[in-house]
Amino acid sequence: MADLEGIKVAHNYYKDVPFANNQPFYVKGANHLDWGMKKHLSNIFDENSGNTVMFAFDHGYFMGSAAGLERLDLVVPKLLPNIDVLMGTRGALRSCVPAQGRKGIALRVTSGSSMLDEDLSHEVLAVDIEDVIRMNADCMAIQTFIGAEGQLSSLDNLSKAVNLGVRYSIPTMGVVAVGKQMERTDRFFKLATRIVAELGANIIKTYYCENFEEVVSACPVPIVVAGGKKLPEKEALELAYQSISQGARGVDMGRNIFQSENPVEMSAAVRKIVHEGFTDKEAYEFYQDMIHQ
Ligand code: R5P
Image (cartoon, rainbow, N blue to C red; front, side, top):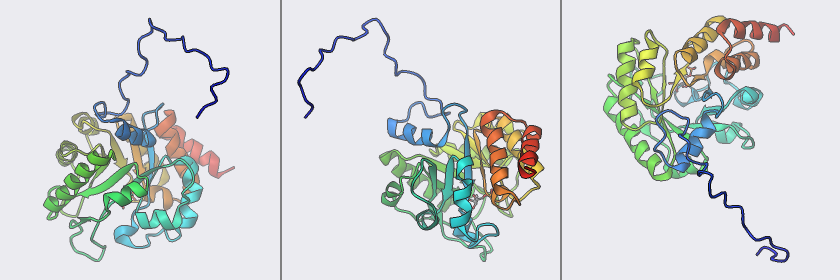
């Protein structure tokens, strides 16, 4: 109990000042969520820029040890200064990533296929909600396969995760997969992102495409753009810039960072675009200056 000696009498009630904490929440589509959800979303999206730099290193869940991710314990820590959110599996996070620090966690919670499969679209919801809570995850990443054989089971996984997420105030990130059979048109991405959002995902990870602004506009929650296959650094920065300038609230890049010859410098350049309004040209100059120092 507090020491009561010398206690001051409360008298500053500011009766004429309106209650301060009544501002709309800054994350798209999240205004009506509860406090716990908003807290997790604010661990993902920066309050000033509204954006996020996610680092995707969950490839091992179906690819095993991908080139550039052979030693997660060495790769991940050096990128941390430029990253807001780590997107990984519970196995990788627990074994290779330091628990200290304030990085957001996007926990990969679906799995079930491997790159040896012809069809990668069959996954299950593999991580119990109790373990999501134990990992202090800020969102659950669920792969969705619209238009593929595994569509039904992937949307079942998504819906189950949303139900559990709502119960425990943990946001869900729906990841729009593109497979061999799926087109990469704005028509497809408008369809897929909207379905995933309407089923309750709080964040959508998808690909950049033509008419991207229309995809963003029709999607009621924030979109983060997937990096995709490794591109030359200049082109990857162009992708990040096009995405952000056309309404994405972040990027979730894997190979374009960890397979770069200069992953730290690349992540720093991406961060300039996402949070500081750099153009792709400015970010590439920044990248070049950093590697020539
Ligand atoms: C994407 O859908 C998967 O989750 C990947 O494992 C990963 O996140 C992809 O990252 P990137 O395409 O940027 O290497």
